[in-house]
Amino acid sequence: MEQEANSKNVIERIRDRIPVPTKISYGLGTALDMWGFWLYPGVAFAVFNIYLGVDPWLVGLALTLIRIYDAISDPIAGWISDNFRSRFGRRRPFILIAGVLAGLGLPALFLVSPSWTSHSFLGLSSIFWYMMGSSLVYIPIMAMYTVPYNSLGAEMTPDYEERTSVMTYKGSMQKIFEVANFYALRFTNLSWFLLPGTVVGKNTLAGMQVYSCILGSLMAIFSIVIFFRVKERYYEKVVVKTKQRISLKASLYETLKCKPFRVIMGYGAMFTLSTSMVGSLGYYATVYYVCGGNTINGDNWNFWMGVAFMIGGFFGAPLLGQVARATQKKTAVMVAASIGILGYGGSWFLYTPAIPWLQTIASGTMGLAAAGLWMLHGSIGADVIDYDELTMGIRREGSFTACGSYVLKLGNSMGGFVAGLILGWAGFNSILGAQSPNTIFWIRAMLASIPVVGLVGVILIISRLDLTKQKCEEIRTVLEKRRGNV
Image 1 (cartoon, helix red, strand yellow):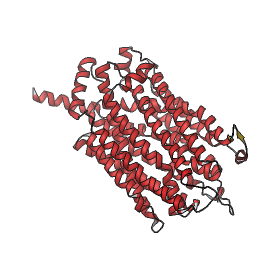
Image 2: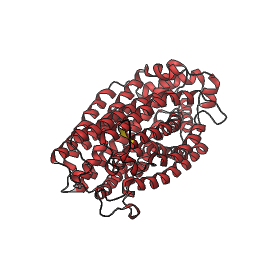
Image 3: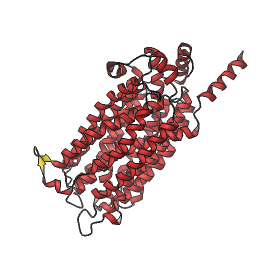
Image 4: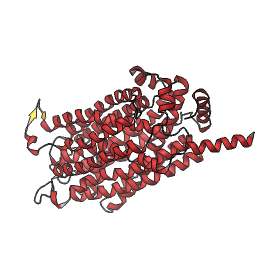
């Protein structure tokens, strides 16, 4: 009897395993998330504040309002995706159509003209209004891609350990594609965009217009690959079989009633708010402290810091995945947060004009921590969806993905707004090359302190999670007795 049970477990593990090519194909989708959502806020201050001269608080306000709007559109996208039925499943059609449209639409976010800086509407810059208007159209398209895409990741395997493997591939590939965000401003240093004899030194706007066309083309190609290479595991045996529809109320209110979900959203929001608040400040610290206000030199260093962030993240996801397998997922989250505290806290000492390359050590450590935290966030999220199916009797990947995205993006938007306020409060002036010592001090101080407070909060919040490996395996056993294997 024991031998028969062991044999059954082996067969089950083989069935649950996802082929490496499929994991890689799924991982390609992180490029759309990285470029479609995070390229824009990553370069917004450099393009719209430093190059075009829009007030930093206005740029921060635009990014905040954009993310709030983005957060509102996600639950609707999740509700639509959960209830959609087609011969291709409920996720893949959106990944294909919205992914292609998002790629084609990315360059439109930068189709402004320097001449607009002298125009205003209702007392606010015309460029501010263009930022809002173009995002009003683009954000729902991205939401209809990212919510089904991330929901698909939670559906790929029912195995506790294999979910960590899927998210490890996704997290490591995400770090590779994230380098493109860091390279963006260095791309604008190419000779085609240089403006000798000017304070700004280069045409950052034209560089981003060309660069976004290149990335947008790749986004369209990757969405097509995912559509053909990744299948929906739960669709035929669970979704179609139950024929249940999910109300918009269930997509919002009832999702947030799930206790384990509130725990992981709390830790994700705490990390996002504290790090996005100073993400822009890191760029300013590099350009105006380490490089003394030389934007070209600063953008070059920003690229190498992106490479260091990528390398740290590439190894961070599998490393912390091993920690999760050896202990528990929540223990691995605590380890990742502790590493992040070292990286962000150490930025006070490692960002120095005396030895510029030291800042890459801080960036690599930050990347390692961030990759581990987001990989574990996705892996635990899939366990939470099983927990919810046990209690509610229906699978709502889209609802959880959308609700989680809402909370995280709200934190990110608030962080971007606060960053703009900090820059204004610290006395930053884009017209000046070198900034005052007081301005530099506060940029460095906020960069080194706020994320540390947030990461301590992450450790405290995740300690409340009670979804252990044993409990998750018990939940799976009950679910498979109820509706069969998938």
